[in-house]
Picture (cartoon, rainbow, N blue to C red):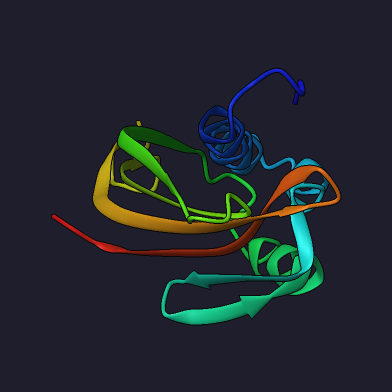
Length: 132
């Protein structure tokens, strides 16, 4: 990320990079976006740190394809300007239905927490739940 972008756009870019890596099954790239203490509440289970997150993602079926479409994203900074919260919806598509083609699986509402560490915005927590 470039230093001339706003905290809002840097956090939004982290979210986009996270889902691009997830959809591409590029878990090395995904892990590079995480801190040792990043917590992801995924499918009702709390995963902490890149190793636990990558291990859980490794359980996904090798043929599974997903597409995460983000919408209505907004980022709020705290008064100190060192932490931020992003809220947004995610349409999740996958190919696990009878036809094998991509189909809408769920619409989630998501909230991510970020912190400014060593001059970079880092993802600290990711939580999502079914919206529709």
